[in-house]
Image (cartoon, rainbow, N blue to C red):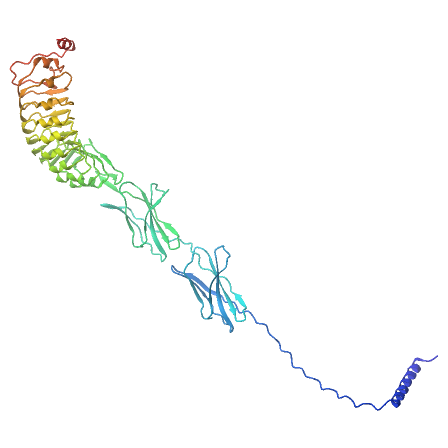
Length: 523
């Protein structure tokens, strides 16, 4: 058995023998091939990819009335290419590109159209020359939610005009004042009556035809509004220690109140008065000129007082006056012709005063006159024929004056006349037939004059007259039968009297007993 070490030794010997044999039999070996020198390769170049630029932050977003300004930090990138300003508004996530800037030193952007009541978000996108971009953090402005400083309305003023004033708004973004008006003190259903865009305009003249409540709105440039306190557009006028609404007082009736003293001038401030009744008191002095400021006055009753002086010529200013009652006072002087310019006058009573002079023919211009009472004065002259032009005249009272001359027949043209009182004057001549046939005449008082002629049968017709007094004149004729058939109660001389005239025969006894009258009338 061959041991392993012997085997290995045998294999080595065999290998060496073969090698020797191979070398003896082969041609000489070729020249050795030169070994090439190793090529030293250069170290690999490391390519660094471009980096995006650093983000820039917005310093602030601010605004005034004219512009919103965005300011950001400058980029320090050496390969800076541009800034892009981006924005979104409110809840809308649509991105708007607002502007590009190529100069790294341009770091301010201004926006002229904006709404600061919405959140306007801005950010800056920085791009380098490699086209890489980085956007910065978003920033916005202080949201405009603060209403303007409200104005304060001051108490209503009155000096010929009714006015309101309010405090001036001094906000930089002031736009306008709005004057609101409402029927309600809570400004329900208020309406705008005026807009004022100048901050120094802080006065408004109120209408004086009705009471409203007022409030001032202050609006800023962004549409935000504040409102003031509320004031009532009225003013209190004190008359005899009582306050009256300047606007709402249209009628003042203080008759029969036992008021003494003069008429207060303050009444003239109640410019909406249409009716003023102060009759049956103890008022003295003259009528104050302030009364003529009451341009809407339709009825003025100052009768049964102790007023004196002349009737003021300023009365013509009461252009709407329909009724003027000045009776039973101590007025003197002439009737001012200005009274006859009051085209709407229907009732004129200046009775029981001390008026003198004559009656102007201008009285014919009072075409609406229904009632004229100048009884118990010192009026002289003739009865103007122009009274016959007053087609609506129903009552004519000129008794107890110093009138002379005949009764003008033209009175018969005033076909609406129901009552004529010309008693206690110095009238002469007959009763014109035109008067006796007036269709509506029921009252005729001509007593205590110097009238003559005959008492016409027209005045004695049954049932026509309710008052007929012709006593104390110079009448010479009357038909006794017609007189007794008239049905008038001649036993009651307060209403029917033809006594104390110059009749040739004594007046008959006309019984008013209805049975007797029926028998008498049957003949």
